[in-house]
Length: 197
Length: 197
DNA sequence: TGTGTTTTTGACCGATCAGTTCCTAATACT
DNA sequence: AGTATTAGGAACTGATCGGTCAAAAACACA
Picture (spheres, each protein chain N blue to C red):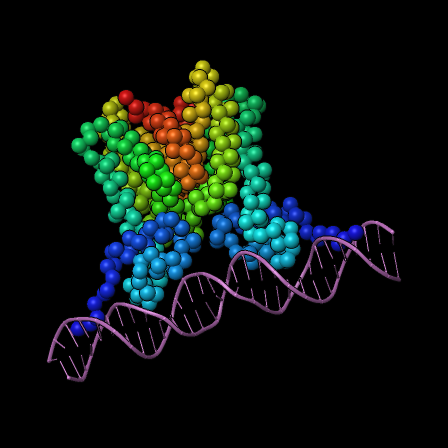
């Protein structure tokens, strides 16, 4: 017994995510968001509460649409060698630069850098999401050649190290490094972590 | 034959650097800066031009006061083993967290993440400064045990890999990870790069 | 003691910020 | 058809944004 939504909430949220991803929390104005989402001001506040509410929803959307596929790649048993899965994931980082010169980096990493230190709620979310990435690397490592034999703690530490490398690569991309440099560095990382054939 | 400056420009710039470092470019309002620098609005614009001019000066100041000492550590021949120098540098990352719960991270890394993609001038500065870090790691690697024997290109790639790890650690700190986790990860990095005794 | 030059200062500018309010439009149920 | 309920939309809020300006103040020189 009420007027129905005229916009697709999931679709609008996806657009909002893109804006936050490109411009960051502070850099994204409500007007920017409205324009991209193609909804009116009142609708935004009615549907998402306030700017931070929309941001948190966008972050969750990023997890579902970008982090999750990455995790599935790291867990993809169709690629028997876990090292190949890790390589594939790292190469997505450079692929977006080569394909579209997309230097938005990782929305999660961006948020960790510019919002987490000022907001405990966001800090917790970032740690949770990063924790999932670490677990993804862990699963892939368990299927990676001689790593199978390592004890759990060592694998966990290696997984954390790979996640650090992943974030560092994202920073490198944002700093503006050429894609070839990023690609070379990926190979170095893989070599240092004993993940090359 | 003119009124002299009443404030120490270098001192004020240092204060501005702290504000930008803590809050980022967008997060730092002119009012925040004025309050910290303890000067009046007009003085700021007379001395530094505009907000971006002040930011660039602050970034240069960061290079002189924070990056440069790091580079000197990586080049410090008083520590004969380059691996120890690298370890010492990485440990400064966790030390600031343990000592003061300082999670501002690296001002350069922060700037790369949230400003470089939107400003070619800042992008270039970030790449230049990161290049210096890479060279620092390179110098240290040349004095690090069996690495002495590696060819130049391999060393360069390893140096780049270490810089990526360095930035990744900075992100990890900003995300809010406990200092013990960061410390463990540092050891993992050193181990993977064959820099442990 | 003027006089010229530069710094300081705070008031002020238009623009934009996030968020609110209120009225209209559109639906579902009776 | 009537009514309750919610969405849509635009005008509006006070606060803050980065930046300007003109007058007062402090010095160096004559």
